Amino acid sequence: MSAKPDAYQRPDLTLSIEDRIAALVKALTDDPDYCGPDTVAHRAGKITLVKASPGRTEWTMNITPEHCNKGKNMHGGMACIVLDNLTSTALLTLAKPGFLDAGHVSRTITMSYLRPVPLGSTVRVVCEAVQAGRNTANLRGEIQIDGKTCITCIHDKAVFQKGFVHPKQQGQGKAKL
Image (tube, rainbow, N blue to C red):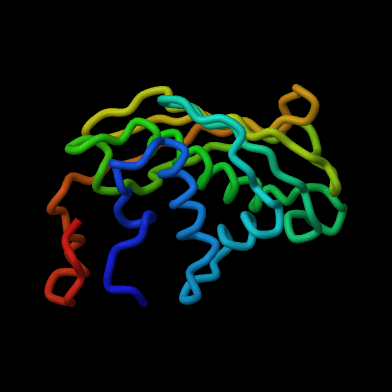
C-alpha cells in the first residue's frame, strides 16, 4: 500500500474537475491492493467520462458479460454498483477546501428498474447532485439507452468533516481525514 492517500481517500482539489475524476477512476481501477466490484464494473465496461460540470457528470459504458445476469441483461446489483460509484462523482465536481473534501458514505440508494439493459448495449450514465450540504447530500442517477431511461436511482450520502475518525479506527494507526 502506498503511504500517500489516493484520490479515493482524499481528492486533490488543485486539479481540474475532469482530472479529479480521472484520478478517482485510476484509484479504483489501478490499485494492485484492491479489486472490488466497482473495479470490475469500471474495467469491464470501459466506463468513460463524457462531460463534467459543477454538480453533474455524464459517462458512457459498454454492457459486458461481467455486468449481466444469466438472462443477458444488466444485473440489478451491478447497476446499483455503477450508479453508487458514478453518482458520487457529481459530488467530487463540487468539492472545495472545507466543503466535500473529507469523504462521504452512502446512507441509502433507491433503485428503479424501468427497462432491461441488454448485453452489448452502450449506455449513457447521467449523474447529478440535487443537494449537497455540510452533513448530507442527495444525488440522482440514470442509465439510458438512446435517450430512453432504463434505470434510475436516488442516492443519499452522509458527508464527513475533516478530523473525523470512525470509533473502530481510533488507535489503529489509521490517518484522520
